[in-house]
Length: 154
Image (cartoon, rainbow, N blue to C red):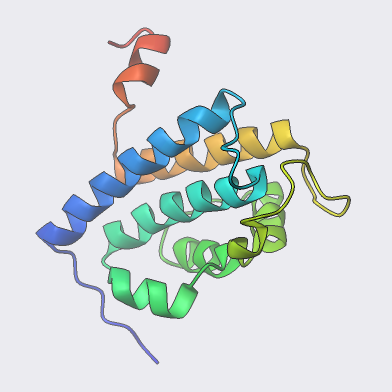
């Protein structure tokens, strides 16, 4: 079924809020802190989904449509984001997205890396940072204040 894309002010506002949330959520993971109530895989999944939804909202997808059709499937979200211009050609990120999908399955999983996971915990953080940086570059978001200071831009 074809979907009509409409860019709206509400969509732009939601996109900005999602990007901030993704960065804020990832800050703890980037520092190596995993919340005790759920594992690293679940939290990485949340950040990846937030990042991909920023792009999807940016090009005009409706948030409710995405929730209904993509659910917690990072592989579907990444495929749709790439088909709509994200241009993230990164096989390791695609492999991680496929492995994590649907990421809700990891909510109560151990913090460690399962034996069949394609990435080690440190690599998952690097891949997630690469995804967020790519989304930021494509959608035009600036660095959060914390990252600007770290990079000497603030």
